[in-house]
Image (cartoon, rainbow, N blue to C red; front, side, top):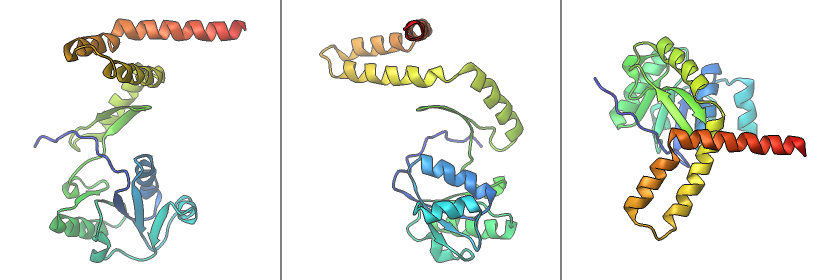
Length: 205
C-alpha cells in the first residue's frame, strides 16, 4: 500500500496524547512546534511534561484513557507502554474517523512519523512505510550532511525574493522562470559566496 506524503497544519487544533512517559515527551515537543493545542491523558507524567502543564501549555487529565476523551479531538497519538491501551485508543479513534498513531505499532497507525531533516522552514521527511525505521534514520543522517544549516538562511532569502516578485508587474510566466533560476544550484553557490564575503568583512571590522 502506497502512502500519501503530506505536511499537516495543526495550529490551534486539539491533539490528544495518551501517555505521559518519555515517548510522549518527544511527540509533544513536535506538536508544540506545530502550534497545536495539546491534551494529555495519563495517570502520571514525566518531570518535563509536568513543567509544561505548570506553564499552561498542556491540558492534563490525570487518569486512564476513556472514549469521551476523543470528543473534539483532531488527531490522536497513543504513546503508552501498554499495548492494550494503545489498541483501545486506536480502535476508538478509528470508529470515530479520527486519525491515530499508536507508537511502534504499525498495524494501529493511520499515519507514520517520518524521519525528518529540518532546516528552518525546509523539511525533508523520509518514510519506509514502517518497514525499516533504521534505514530512514540512516538516510536522514546522510541528508543532514548534504543539507546543512545554510539552507535555512537561503530559504528565508528565497521567501523574501518570492514576495517581492509576486508584488511586481511581471507576467506569471516570467515570475515562474525567475523563481526557478533563484532556486538553482548556481544561485545557491552565489548566495553562499556572498554570505562568506559578509562574514569576512565583519571579521575585518
